[in-house]
Amino acid sequence: MDSFDKGWFVLQTYSGYENKVKENLLQRAQTYDMLENILRVEIPTQTVQVEKKGEMKEIEENRFPGYVLVEMVMTDDAWFVVRNTPNVTGFVGSHGNRSKPTPLLEEEIRAILASMGQSVQEFSLDVRVGDTVRIIDGAFSGYEGKVSEIDNNKVKMIISMFGNDTVAEVNMSQIAEL
Image (cartoon, rainbow, N blue to C red):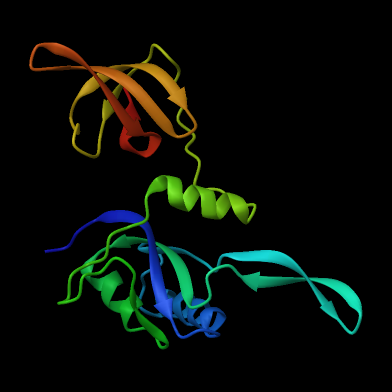
């Protein structure tokens, strides 16, 4: 059975092959018609100063040698294409025995991408405090509630659960306007 969990996953690669893995993965996504499942491939880098021949130079180096980040919808087919990409040795967070990996936490990927000057996908919903919205994904899927706070891509809202008002915190991607 396919799992449709979208998230950022960490691939293990042979050190020094990160760029080749990125190139191969993007090519395979196109070849296997997986562009809607394999969304982004990133290699976290940082600028460092090194001394070469008595001069200080700035160079880009991998922050995590041997690792590549991929944003994907974790379907069986996408998982197969990614894990069988040349020079990919596995997923971080997979417990072996053909188990699917765990995605990075939103805070982790946000911090990594921010350090590279990039961002996690922003959402363009026109939602304000006081609006009523429907939760379309996650544990509270199907509930409607009133937005009480918006912070970045996180939304706190009041939902009625078992006859009591409860505060639910969800990602912007998990709600839809009514």
